[in-house]
Image 1 (spheres, rainbow, N blue to C red):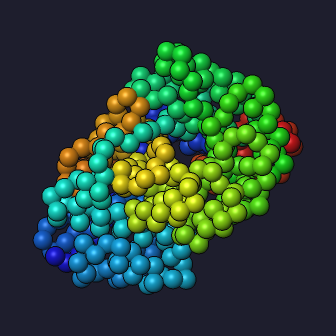
Image 2 (cartoon, helix red, strand yellow):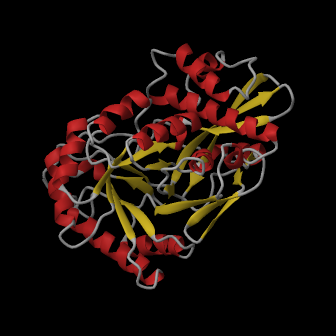
Length: 393
């Protein structure tokens, strides 16, 4: 079997409501979802969800190769792009191709990827993550009630701009999940997407911890700030979670070595091989791993095979337009199916028909860092957009 060609598509995740975080909001709820399809000369097609930036160059590293040599081909792609491949969108392109190759390998073996990788239990514990910063209280409660109805008892909100509002929303969430769990204590997490300084992080979380128990604070400071994460961890009770925007083991290693991270995260967009290597590095330091992503299906399969998986992010309860998944949500967990490969199928006609919905990549949203991020002094006003507001110092 040989890798013959690739194709690319772009679909949308339609939240049906505003979705975003401290950096910005997609007001129409439409978020781009790039897709890479890798075809073989034996008719098997693998699917990777992720960018296709500079894919022509990256693909030359694997064209004509046996797709089942996945980890060797991953390193071959890194070598082919060694000056750009360990950062940003190019690393995501490598991740998308890597995920597609794992899909092919498992399809060729006639097994679901979770079983091929050595997993025993197809259930993957999940937590709710609603990209909810733009929702009012009624919308917020309704969104998380839908997760609670599927058995989720852990949830992460987006915040970091107004401590009183975040405390209020976390209290609403605690009460909702406690009722759904018949009195059992839920797990609450706060994700601020790198919007604070070190001192702001400690003051903000300490204020919340006066009345609430946080399981973790996510990305409190810039992703590369090793001493900053360590300082935050020393100053609060909650665990510090980070890593979704780190690319390559060389970026994770300083944080782990310094004891600056408690929950090691990695994003689905960076691929399965990257996740497996990060999980092994974290396990060597007795740290848990937690996958991140809108549709982290590849990492869900991989999570079944590592000893230190903690919990995986569940964002929208519906897949992207034109994407179907052989999994379901039950009793607070993803339950993976028996379809060979990832169990991920693409309806290209549906995606083409909805191409007018795909937003411009240069349009606003959570992928653009606000000018005042990390330099705010006052709380956000309820009637103002995150980009133009300032934070309680």
